[in-house]
Length: 418
Image (cartoon, rainbow, N blue to C red; front, side, top):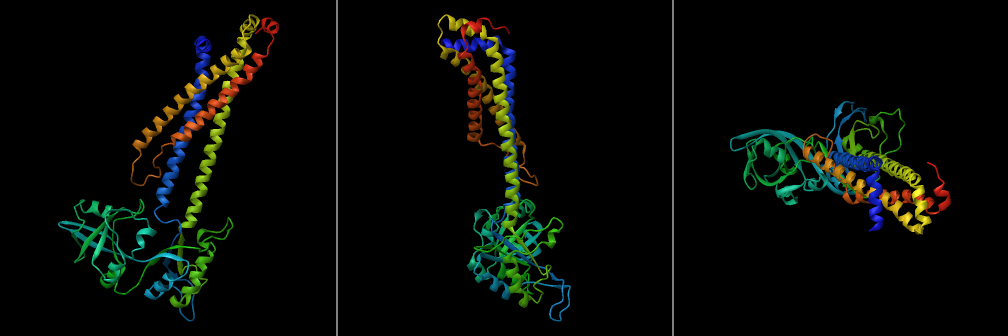
């Protein structure tokens, strides 16, 4: 109790100095919390933007021939048929696969009407595009085999129809009634209203030409690494990955295009996007780490400087105490205790204020919409560990002048002039 009262007495007698030191510590932790929260918000926003597909997803869109091929002219529109779809589906690298037909139609339920995208897809579409089912189920292989008139409606379509109780009831697409078997969330923030139906049903009713606009897949063992490009190369001039070139070589004789024709197929790889996203996240984490280290260093320097000043001002006091028999460890405990109390008290004040600010910002950030910032909260254990590290640094910073004071000779201390 005697040491605690001495610590409190020293702090009370130097309130301005204590306040300035405490403010520096609190401000450092506060900035660290805000930076951590902001980086988490940016990372969550990036993941929300690009995380609507499986990490190994590949989309292949049919384009148009930009080069002549075996007597055929250029500028021909290309498309997939069931022949190409079945060939791609059976490739050894393919794990999940869906053909996709996109068209548009008027849908109505009761007196509500809306023009939406009609998506003819296979059952694997849900896993590839990470569709979250909030009610009912997604399409399956039986629906496709039976050409069933069933559909899965997304939330945006529900909103445009007035959010009716539609699950298990019939929705008209054009003039054809479809049983609603599931409700799902939209894949990404820019995806419009859509209704998903079996691709066989879509071909029979809405795409009688059997033309398929694109296919999507997840892969196992496929080499999706894009060769390095020069800074002068434009994005559309990038060289193809080994898997992309394999697709071009396989489809070239069937779809009648030159395998070196970059416009014939548009291949999009989520793996490349994930790699770019991870690079951005790594840069953000590195920036926060550097700022965190600088915060710890500045806190240590601040506490160390103020403890040096405190020891210098109390040199004669320590000399008198040693002269009358005070053990050196009491001087050590007094100085270290003062630095520990200041660092811990103001460190946790800065931490809780920062967490409160981030929670306030989180409550103001919209949960949906085109806002590239999501859930800017902080990991409390991580921040607590950082604050604890700062406290330890403060203890070390206080121990340095305390050890010096502990070893000073009484006669030198009594003759010391400030």
